[in-house]
Length: 134
Image (tube, rainbow, N blue to C red):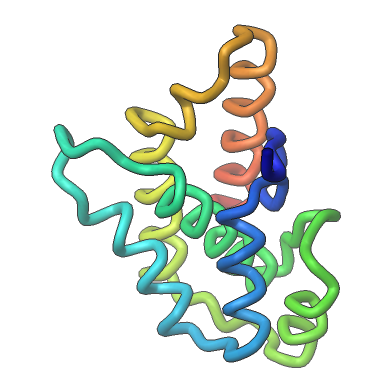
């Protein structure tokens, strides 16, 4: 079994995306991960892979706006630090849209069997959204 937890980087798909990003960081890669989720039809089922990547990408956007997660991988934090504030309002909006889509209907949400764990995961998404919105 792979890595699985309520934190943004507590699953294999998010970690895979973060590793790919760290190897070739770009705002385009962030936008692609977020757009893949936010542009899906409302009735289309959102898989874990896309959700994990979008959550990790949203964390990078939050970090670019000076609100990093304590769990941000070191290699990404090292890239963010000299960048300054690069996240445009459009990128922040895209990140918020992707998180809303993940929260609304996704395999990610369906994988939480225990209600208490599901609530912890929703709380973590809400906290990320708050960091993005502030």
